[in-house]
Picture 1 (cartoon, helix red, strand yellow):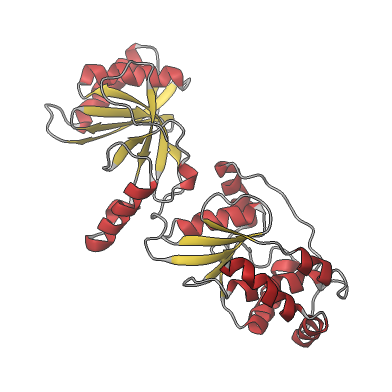
Picture 2: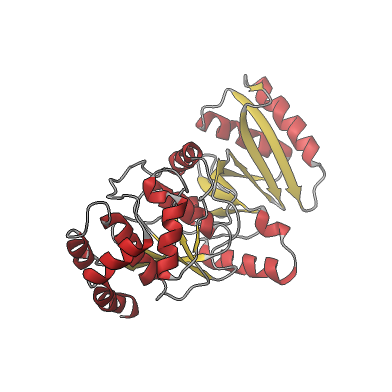
Length: 331
């Protein structure tokens, strides 16, 4: 990561600003641990309610960041802040705006003064103030002020605050959204991956070609359930507080709650589903917001009885293959 900018800057010089909310709502040791984790994980310049980070900062990879955006840095004087707000507005192509100003430190003005004076200045320059217009965030921090148009980050809490969790990745957009949500609740995901590139987490790459070759000879409609069962069994071998997946319950036959519960019963495991009860269209919207591609995968599934799946598992000797694949995790 590049080095954070130092004041003073030219008007054209931008950095990324990141803000945090839930982290600072915590108290005592939990808050301190969250702050320490963010300091380690983020490419920060200075750390407080908002901060500036390097130009190539990707907020989606850092749970705990509530919002972020390209920020202009001004001296903490009303005239300087007003000029920088105009530069920011022109750069972002804003005609209608709304201001939100926050202040920390010793100054001769209040947050309300900033909103009034900067708003008046922008109106005199031909911009229109409108509630619901493009938000311009002004964060006054001591002698330095960050001015930026915020974008939504994953929010929540930093990864690892409450420990580690195992995540079974299936390569789709639902897995991406579930993974980000899991991480933003303070868990560091250990992600079991065959193909694809998870947005965050500690990646454990798997070669399951032998499994796929074997289950291709299974009864029609049982390939999907057998692969799912295999991954559940494999995930038990990874140390974590629980196992999670990106399934939306009831969205299709491969995510039917009763069928999944039967697979859990055979594997003797209980699965956590961060987006299990979400509306699928909302998950799509969230995936689109985060820039995750929306792709659907064909799944060879049918309704089955527990005995039928157990018989097929034994007949294909998948337990022996499981023993061999476990070495990929421990090696």
